[in-house]
Structure formats: C-alpha cells, structure tokens
Length: 393
Image (cartoon, rainbow, N blue to C red; front, side, top):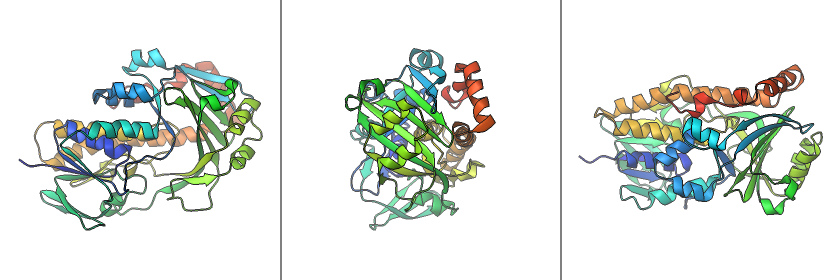
C-alpha cells in the first residue's frame, strides 16, 4: 500500500522528523521554503536525553566529529565571579543516563542530519516550497505550495518553526509572545581569545536582570557565548537575526566581574535575537489536529533556560517514529497517541524554562536564596534526572 508523510520545514526539527519517519518505514516529502538547506544561529546544548536519540539513529560517529563533550557545568556569580555550584557531566552523564552531554553548533547538527538523509531513497527534499494552504480529507492531507505545487500525503508534520504557518492553518491562534528578553550570540575560535578566557566547560554566569552562557563547540576548537539581557529591539521580532554592536552588550555588563567583562570585550561580532515563546501547552489538541501534527517550535516554542528547544523537537521526532512504527491502527489514532505522549512533557519543560529565567535573573532575597541553595545542594540542585532520563522518566 502506498503511504507517505509530508513535512513542512527543513530545520533541525524537520530533518529530525524526516529521519524518524524514514526509520519507521514511511516515505517522506519534505518542503523547505528556502532555496538551500542552511541553519542560522550559534551553539546549542544537548542533554543525554537528546544525544541518546541521535545515537539510536546511528549518528554517534558523525556527532563525535563535530560536537564537544564538556566534563563540567559550572555556575558562577556574574558580579563577583565566585563559583556557586557545579554539575559533573562527561562520564557521570554516560553512567547515569546512557549518553553524554554534548554542545554543538546548530549548523553542524543540521549537516549531520542532512548528510544522513540525502542517501535515503524514501526521503525527497524539496526546496523553494512554502506551504500556502492545506486541506484535510478523510484519508489524506492535500497541500498546496506558494509556487503552485500540489502534494498529497497520509499526514502532514508542521515543523516550520516559531512563526509556523502550518500552525496558523490548523489552530488559527495568536502569534508567539515577546518575552522581553534579548539574546546576544557570538562564536569565536578559542585561539582568538586570550588563553585565560578559553574553556572546555559549560559556564553559566548569573546576575540581576541578565545571564551569560559559554561553552565549546566544533570539537572544542570554538567558543560559543550567549548573553541574555532584559529589553526589546527596534525592529521586527519575526526577523531571526539582527546585526548589533558589541557596545550594547558591554554596557549591560558594566557591573559584572572582570573575567566576564573581559570575555564579552574580547568578541567583536555579535548577533541579536528577540526571544519569543508561547504559554505552556494545555493539551494534546495543541499538537495534533486530525492528520496534521506539529513538532518542535511550531508546537511548543520555549525560552532557552533549560537548553532544550532543539532537544524537545528531536524527542518529538523520536516519539513520532515510535507511533508510526507501532501496531497497525488508523493514522489519526497514531497521531493522537503522539500528542498524548508529548504534550505534558513539553509543557513541563516550557514552564520550567520560564521559571529558570526568573531564577537566573533574580535580585534581592530570591537571588540570595538561590545562591545559598546552590552552594548547599550543588549537583543535587543542578541535575535534572526527570529530563535527562528521557520521556519515560
């Protein structure tokens, strides 16, 4: 019997969905609106829950060629520089959760997935194709693209990101909300910064109204730095990438410790994103409607304060693979099972990410309590077993 899954979006979530469907034995047509497969952004962190999925897809060797695998996550006070707590990663993560903690450039992860998909004869990658409209029928979904292409599949997976058009076609809800947080992102070769500023660890600097995260990518040869401050941009939030001047971030860091100011000062080229999200999911109906399933940011965009945005998209894809490869049943029932298995975990991560942002940027008594708790509890506070063990935890 002929069967096929359509996927809208060729980012990390869309490629992960294509890999999942193909692994489950379902041919795929993936529609990407751009004229080439590219990935913008900077680094991402991947907990053991995410790396384990990639290993299951046979991507471990390729991942080892492009990722870094930090041994420690440190939390430091942005004002004094003092260490507040640390979490051992590396072998501890492997022993507890079955996979390491990894840090990687978004473009490198995107290329790993794309390279794995290209030889697959059951995966068709179509560029310059924007999903303009869709119609659900009793036994199929018909899609029309802006260029006039008409396609039909058993289901459509909307993996078209934060500003998902597929979501608007099936849910018709409000646009994402602006969080009031700005992310300054930069990547620089480690050799181009002073030796004392280089690092192979994940370091999180916490200060009132701001925080900075740094970690290695590209086998540890590059350093990824993200500074998040409270404020708004003058421009369109839908524009993913805004060029910016380093002086803005340096001014925000005026009252931080010398090592942090030196790190920010050593980097000249920054990119700016206005962070947007949605409220935590309220039910399976926000992830599946009939034969249309949403995945990743199209379903549950989240703040980056648990480093799980890409991770939840990859977990979504792994769950989709399981239901598509599972016992024979009507496809709508399989997609409902996917939504039922995913929405609560996604909502939990969304809510925890919002809460973490408040804790990271705290001042006054909340900041004092945070720092004391971290010093007393350390690893017990920083570890997240329910997350790193995966969806069954």
